[in-house]
Image 1 (cartoon, helix red, strand yellow):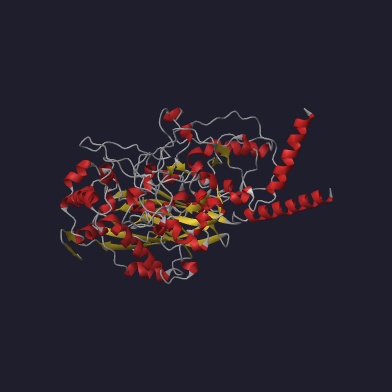
Image 2 (cartoon, each protein chain N blue to C red; image 1 turned 45 degrees about the vertical axis):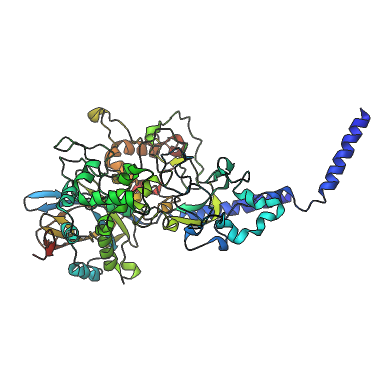
Length: 267
Length: 360
């Protein structure tokens, strides 16, 4: 009987310990932020769908180093990146259909393989290579991207990832992004940051799309300062384009390099 | 008759006495489960033992999926060993073990010894689910979101990138299929095992009111169960490639049995909900997946979100459309503590107090 009581007591102590650990998961003070991905470009409004924004603790002054790095960053445009790889006109047409950034954007059909030389070569490689799909030729089509030339496989994504890593390199722990969110595909393209841990009731943050967004012949990086507070109404922000600092938003605008097949130079 | 009973007792006694002289118990004769955590089993490259694809990859798969190059068998020969060098994956270190203890070592993989042993025929099934899994899977949803994302789509070609397989036709009449979450997650065709995901709290709420709610299969989405959708891009050359197992799988301290029960806080949410009132007949929840699955979209490790107290879909995403109905429920709960929220939740969850995240 006595041992049973001890067992029960130990069990209760363990149980309450577990609950205490799990109860810590919800921060005492948390805020939310919705970024409304709408950019006013001259007379029309552009919806920035599927764009990733990063949230940093502190105001623009505290994140000065990052902003300087963003201004100095040299980023190749999508067209330039692929033209530098000597992409065929057919490949570029395939990308432009649906405004794709990579070959992972949509299904590569048999018709695409017939039309686009890069896809044709990859399929041939799939059937002939050392790790080929001769036993199951349909896989040569289905798994075609695994036989594309390196830059075409994931090069554009890798370049952008390297750019972000370069921007955040050597940053102290408290200057790294606290969250990232991508705008959705709705009519207003919202990026939703939730459960932002706050150190004070109201705290300053900046959000920025580290990778420039290509719109027309220019690229844009928005760096906006915002107050996030538990009791404050969630701000929904429009993103102005025309000037460099508007409504606490700093905008880094660049002309995109003009690229044609086999060449790429700054405008 | 008495003599017969006596003989039985004498026989039993003799058997018990005799068995005490045996050097090994039955437990000792049972083959040990192969452990990847054993230091001598940990090589920098998995292909020291595992060949990809296995010899039998064209044979029907245990998961009934279409065949594709995969590891579908126990390690046998170290890659590139030829001819008589059989079982090189094991025998390099364990040659002596096959002669010890009646060859119990072989029973790790074999049910019956023989050159024609195959999974399901002389070999244990591979993978052996009875032993639990020794690995966990890391899947960075954020990276996959980024790489399949595109510039703003032309509205005349596709309604959306992550809209669930509902695209408009291109001007030339052909349907353009963009990759999106539905590459890996389709509406479930078979109702999975499901349960209410209970909040991590020390509350002792009132008993759940009778709740006859029964979701159908299309309330849920399925998820990949094998390597097929991964190898689509990662079979070779795009890292982590199929031979780089540790690129996606991390060894766990103890084997575990992954739960097949889908746990939901809001079981009444249907991914295929048809609209009523003004949106009658429309698939009202067929939005961009990232409109609600914010945390998955921003996560570089799926596992990290599995044990969080916060729901993977933030409350704020629900109120953007269902604000009035939810407000009504919360007000009822405020007035009457016995009221159990039932608009999104079943009574198993609705009986608990309003959580912190519902204040957002």
